[in-house]
Image (cartoon, rainbow, N blue to C red; front, side):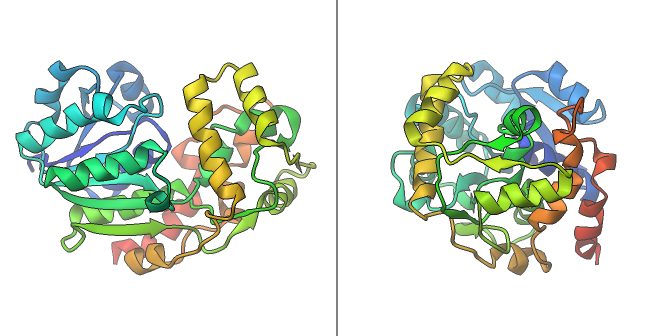
Length: 309
């Protein structure tokens, strides 16, 4: 079969899971990555992997050749949408891409500061068919981006106070992405993807404590304390400010809404936080590797088994 689907964002959290999901359902696809060697090591050598860099137009031709549908993830380091993202989108449309499934964020329509809003506007103005997956905060942020503070210090230090977040498992986002990429009827649609419940970080810490059999604390840092800590850890200022903006929105209660889009699209409930914590518990254990191997995710196979019917 010919390859008509392009996946970006691998080997990141969601991009990797989209790769796994498309493999599971047997759909051919191409993966556009910044570093082919690293991606091959993490994703496997049996994939069609091509070098794709938003900042290098010379990589566009091979990446978009024959592609009709594209899963788009914004690289975290790129925040100047018009300069860094727009040229690739224009090249994709010119090359014949008919649908772009964009991984956006929950509440983006009310937050014009974040790059995701500008990318949505870019796609709306491009004339291409779009599907916006406006996802809540990934559960996997806790096992990757914020892993070390849990693993090393038994704490969660995010500036959201007592606000609730309708966390979603990245595997559910991937399942939805694969579905809208391969089934008709999802063009020019906007889906808000959340889990089945909204939790505050005290509850998150309690659930992790129960899973890991040690006390995990939520420290309730201020916004200023959070920024200072991220910069001290070596994060870039631009990345830190974007992350702070997202958590500030959460602090005001804008991430607590729970939707039924995941269950409606997949025909099953979203993966719950307790199941996520159990599946990824090794990532927070002493001397554990950061990567979560597929064999450590049996619940994913159980949770998605209904899609085979």
